[in-house]
Each structure stands twice: as C-alpha cells, then as structure tokens.
View 1 (cartoon, helix red, strand yellow):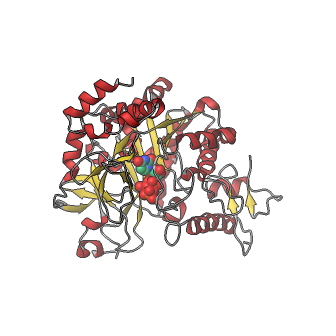
View 2 (tube, helix red, strand yellow; view 1 turned 60 degrees about the vertical axis):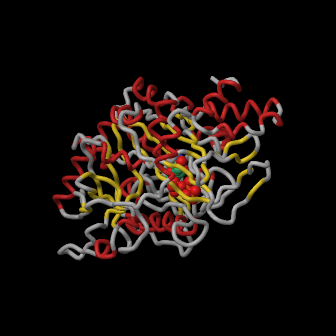
View 3 (spheres, helix red, strand yellow; view 1 turned 120 degrees about the vertical axis):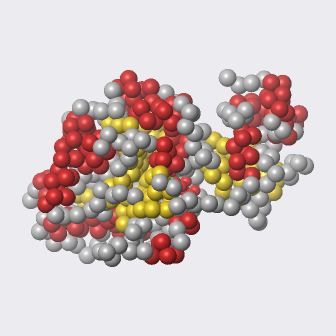
Length: 460
Ligand code: UTP
C-alpha cells in the first residue's frame, strides 16, 4: 500500500530524511505517485541502522584465517566412487521433482556496459544464444533427463524486470512450461551521501540500486516464491548467477554431496588461477566458514602452498550454491540478518537546488548484501572443488579477463574437448554445443549420431 503524503512526511521526518520531499510542490500527480511508491517500498524504519552501519569506513579486521575442508577434485577410483554415490542421491532428488533452479539476474551489469538485462547478452560462439537461453535450455534438458517438471525462479530488479520478462515472453519461455517459470523483483536500497542523506536521482526519483544478491532471501519470501516452492514440495534450491553460461544448473553430483552431508548451504569452488587472482576464497574466518575477500588475504597467505604444491587458499568462489528451503525460510524471516556492505561510488543526483550533478569523484555510498554472507549461518555446509573450464566462464567486463570473448572461447573449447573425446576432428573455428544436445561429455558421446558433424550441435 502506498502511504499518503502526510504519512510519508512524518515517517521521513522521524528518520531525518524529509529532504527527499523537498520538490513535492513542483511535481505532477504521476511524479508524486511514483516517488511515494518508491518510498513505500523501502523499509524506512530500519534504514537509519543500515545507514549508520555503512557510514563509517571502520578499519576492516579480517579475523583468523584458515583453509576450509574441500570435497577435492580427483580422477582416482575412490573419488569416482564417492562422486557416483553423490550423483545417485542428487539424481533421486531431481527425479522426485524436489529441486528448484534459482537464477539471480537483478544486477546492474555496469562493468559490461550492455544496454539491456545481462541475460539477453549473446554469448553462443556461433548461434549467439543468450545467457538467458543457455540457462533455460539447461533447465529444460535436465527436466527431460529426469522426467520431472522442475520449477525455475528468476530474480530481477526494477532496473531490468520488464525487459527480462519481455525476453522470456519473446522466446516463449525458451520452451519451458509457463507455470514452471516465475520472474520476480528483488529489493532496492537508496544511495546516501557521505553524511547519510538519501540522494535523489531526480526531483521525483530516489537514487536506488538493487540490494545485492544477498537480497535473494528476502525477495524469495516477499514475492511468494518460497511459499510456491513449499507448496510444490521443493526441498533444495540450486542458486546460480546470470553471467555464467557454463553454470551446470541442477548438477546432481553437487546436489548429492549437499544432501548426503545434510547441509543447509553449500558452495562450488574452482582452484584459483594464480595466487593473486581477484576472487574471494572459501575458508574459515575465526573458525566459521565464509568467503575471504582477496584484499583480506596477505601476500604470504595467498602464496602459501601445501605439500603437493597447491595453493592452501585456492578455493575460488564461483557463486554456485545449494540451499535447503528451510534454511532460506530461516534467513528470510529475518532472525539471522546479513551484514550490509558499503561501496563508495560516483552517483549522479539532483542537489538541494534541483540542479543535476554528475560527480567526478566518489560522492556516495551504495549499500549491498552478499549471498555468501549466509554461509557462516548454515549449520552444515560442503564446499566442492570443480574444474573451471567446465563450470565457470562469467561475463563481467567488456574486454580482457571475464569478457564475452573469453566466455565464448571457453564454451567453444568445451565443445571441442567433447568432440575430441568422441574421436571427431575439430574445426579450426569455434564450435557450439547447445544444452539440449548434451549437458555433459557423457551425454554428448551418447547423443552423437553419424549425421552430427558440427560445428553447431543442437536440438530444440
Ligand atoms: P555482480 O556482483 O558481478 O554484479 O553480480 P553485476 O551487476 O552483474 O555487474 P557490475 O558489478 O554492475 O558490473 C553477480 C550476479 O549477481 C546478480 C547479478 O545479476 C549477477 O548474476 N546480482 C547482483 C543480483 O541479482 N542483484 C544484485 O543486487 C547484485
């Protein structure tokens, strides 16, 4: 419900933010309605505590750091048997229809600088299949493999919701059943100036940005997605991020390790490519599992190796999680809240005189929560090490590392590895294997017929 102007003014005055209504008398009806709606969607009463927690750049104490236990990579018989047991447990869960896929796609994608939701970005090396299509095709292929209708939830934000819905509509849900797919929006938080005052992007608009992937928990609950999961008998959620077309959605081995351990929230990691790769690593902070930010790892710890020459802190977080539905409910109900992080940014805004300002220096603090901050709150977790070349090719930057060129190359390279395993000669140019053709090498080998020559291997 949208508050009346007087209610809003009183609530804003109580928290020292009434300046956001300073242009009210100049606004037309639609503009007033829109500003009131933005304000009503915020939890104004808890805002002062959030703002206070990010206002001071308190010196960061990282705590005592130790590596965490890993389900390690390996090719030996014992590892294969271990993973086969996990695969069986995960496959049973999938066949019983007890897992949902959950894609987070509400980010701003600032580094990529693409005009549209990142999910629309074309990454297929030859067909230019979009990120949304890769993920949805994997969901479909998994449903087909396990003969189950597994639901798919997609989190967007105000910034890209309508265009994301349009992408799904235009593609007729990428072949998924309409009642299998739901898109919902995450929460937004205002940027504040260095005194903690909310900034206005325009006279009738707050400077809002998505509340971070940690907003997933609250958004799942608020949107009704969590109720829907419980109604459908979903027990586990496979969490992944829109920018990674190699994300093995519903991976049965990972899900199996997670449920066999009775874990509440689990994570996949890849060995860091070098000691100074800028990625958070899974480890123990003061005895509790969490993500150690790369800036918190001293040079000595980053370079430390074990007796096999492997980095001790090598467990690079690739943001693929399994979470139990009761755990999501517990976090979302708010008794265990996630910390809010501050990011100093340049935020364009209107000043007290209504003049548009485009700052050349950081002028504002954006607030965000991170999904991995829920890890220390889980009673049990597993951390599984996987191969980067098979599972992690995120599109983050326009150029250089983690750019579309690298992602496309990695998708093509995976296809070429599978072709090689099948004894096919590989073309000099790129190849592309659609998830509906094969989800993994085993399926590729089983699916291949004499008429499949590539370079595009696909089914609809
Ligand atoms: P990133 O932190 O890499 O951010 O998000 P981003 O928004 O994609 O890109 P930059 O930092 O602005 O360049 C990792 C994943 O988390 C999602 C993103 O959509 C992406 O899938 N995410 C991030 C959300 O869903 N909501 C958020 O508030 C932030």
